[in-house]
Length: 173
Image: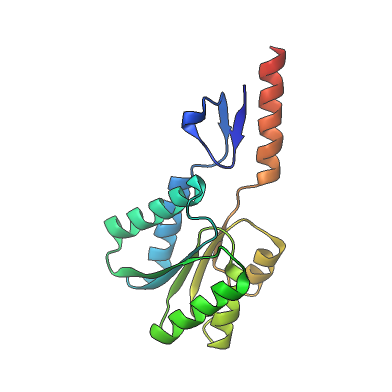
């Protein structure tokens, strides 16, 4: 028997899943981006592993919310943060050359530091709305500095502890 946490794989025959609903989290991010941009604007999406089920569900929720409720918000590019920060920085810089008015960034996973660097070089770090996941020390700093607008915290350490506790209780009962 096993318990999944952080990413749910329903076809895995797991006995329990510990974590948040990634699709709904994506929809909440879509709602917040819509609220920040008042229904109109251009958005970049950054993701480290778009083939990860959790990240795909977040992105699906975000896109579905925008499609259904905010047709005036356009996703202008999807940046896969697969290699390193320099690649993401380069892609963001290129996007800013092609679309000099990026209104929002949805960071599905990691990669936000290189995006922020590119925005700062264009003087856009305070005018671009940024939504990310995980309250890392860097994200705390960016929130305090008014650069990052919203973070969805998942508390992975707590999820891991809870998964072990559930598995332990299952095994001893």
